[in-house]
Length: 165
Image (cartoon, rainbow, N blue to C red; front, side, top):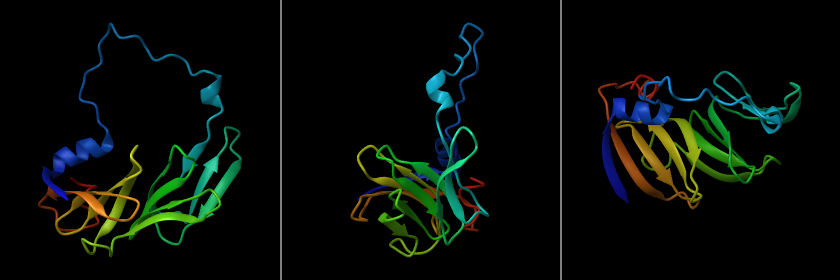
């Protein structure tokens, strides 16, 4: 297993995808959305909700899944499955709701909260785990941790570690 150390600020910038490049006047403005974009659905989830939903462009519900814990992050994988992070783990489900993969924060390294999960092209999943010390973990489909990045921070409250990094 590969271990790496990063500062909280570096992780915050990576996780939020911030671009530090200033806008240039010679750059063309973004093109107007084409018809394909208008047909995209929106995946909706968030803290304080007990549901993940796909909403169509008309605002109608196409699909939903009730979750038993507070959902912090959700995304649709290229194969159409739904990956979401919740307080005590991350889970991938088929559109039928059938579980495909799950990582619980009680799995090693023990404890903490999961605030973000992202599927990778190789089939693995990256999670941001707020524990002591906080970590970025790459986990394979057999739940084996293949990369463990320890994040250096002075924040001791697990609920705030990645949010205030």
